[in-house]
Image (cartoon, rainbow, N blue to C red; front, side):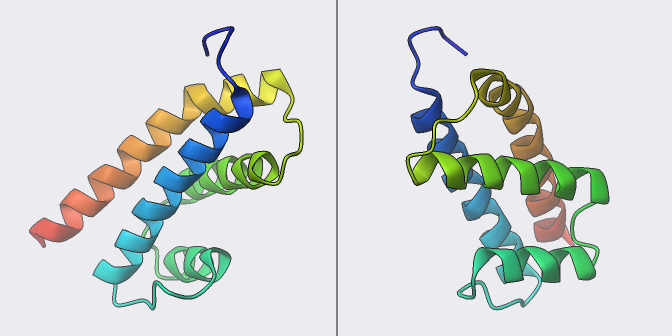
Length: 103
């Protein structure tokens, strides 16, 4: 993460991108994507739509994003980790979306 970057702003943006992809996966799986995100998350997990390691990363990233969105000061090390891992998790979710479209 760039030293001048606002970690909270970056985390909020990452959380928004994660939510967009999770809700898109839910739509593809005929899961109601208008329900609370954590409920969508649990149904995707239950239905095996995303692997457990990815789900673990998503949960942590969403948690950091939620904290940042509500004004909590997120630890710089945690924010750096999130910004390093976040793009990898987004890539896996994008791959899952792409693979589901082809089925």
